[in-house]
Image (cartoon, rainbow, N blue to C red; front, side):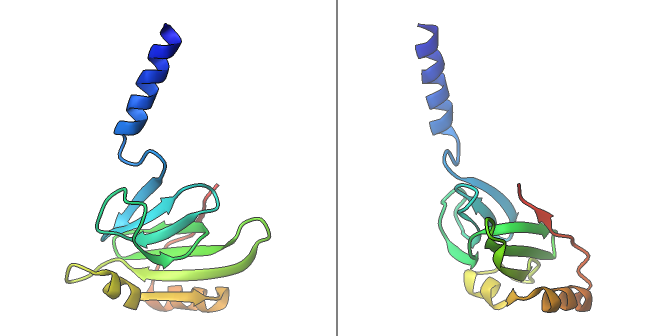
Length: 133
């Protein structure tokens, strides 16, 4: 009886959660780091919280990222083979309510490490990428 009650309570909590199968981190301005698993992790623009869908800004798989109120930076590629590595810089501060089109037009990427590093320096972005485990 105790096990059945525990399973029922667990299922109820899972179903009442906002995102039972998706982890999302709000990065600002309707931008989310959306993660289904360690492979399907991307940055999306979505006007709905916990939708699990939206306009893709950084494709999978996001390997590292950092953000503040002005910028989002990200590294994407193949985690297993450490190949197809790309870097991204996304503006995160706007004078108007951003749309997906505005965000996309204010996204630099795909960049290689050399250009990414130069852009960070030129724009005065002091963020450091944090690897996602």
